[in-house]
Length: 389
Image 1 (cartoon, helix red, strand yellow):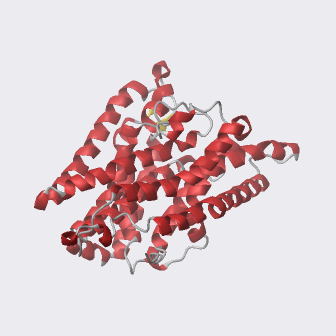
Image 2: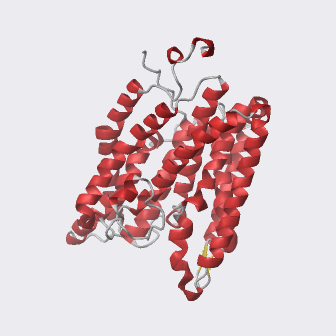
Image 3: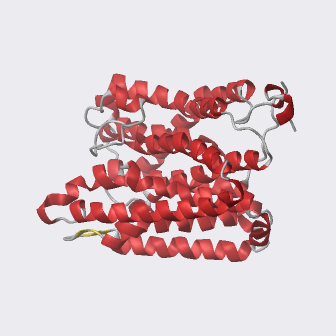
């Protein structure tokens, strides 16, 4: 079987993925290293990088699957899940093994039971501060990967009304998530009675509270493959889409800075109930703008965005433990964790660690994956003669 031709890099998507990991790093650096907003408002809002990753994942996976289904190909669940596991598990297992063997040295309290990581349920009722806590987002991603193919296969059998039903389901699930977060906010949103101690385990880390953030990415893919004329019209207005996406993201950033958490009160009601969904839809506008072939994001090659995008998964897994390990040597050397020197040292070390994991584990396994399982769809030779194109 011939090996698939590598897809060309999409500069706009690379820039968004690089932005996402940079935001997460800025947030975690302030939270676990410097203990102050080293990167200004980026440190305060950096947690939204995870939300951007969710939107990107929703689009990238749905785009692959809807594209094949639109061409009349047959989705192979074993091939899909095999490709996803070879994409995510090797890096994850290496870092998980390091945490399991060296958790006191790598930071955080005792990790949850091993089976919680292996079953991707570690995010359920997760307490902040445990070792390898940042794997919570990977758990939610894996849960999404488990659900989406089955939903698309079912929807593909619903005939000519499947697009209408798909949009209705996206709207219904988004409203349901907002309603569920509203219920949770009344239990865990306020400082009164120390209720906010339950916010992270029950809202921030929880699957039902965050899975709707993949839906805007799915919606972009659905628009692309289900409504080609509307998609072509959108792709013809790259600058307007970019301006709209940037404005929406800026508005959400301002609202989150003012109302996500209010000292003396607790988590903002609107930002908890609607804010997560609104943020994801704002990112979806920016994503759509980045896909316009003639638009600025597609034409501009932001320096460093391509390697950061390729290393982003490895960087996400490794940056926290590497930063934690460096805290004591920096202190011994008399270098303040909040200083510019410490920032340069820690950032360089995290980049090196992410690159090593990418080059030593991720890239070789991806090459094997593309050789063993070159696509998500059953090859024509494996289909009955009547089903071959």
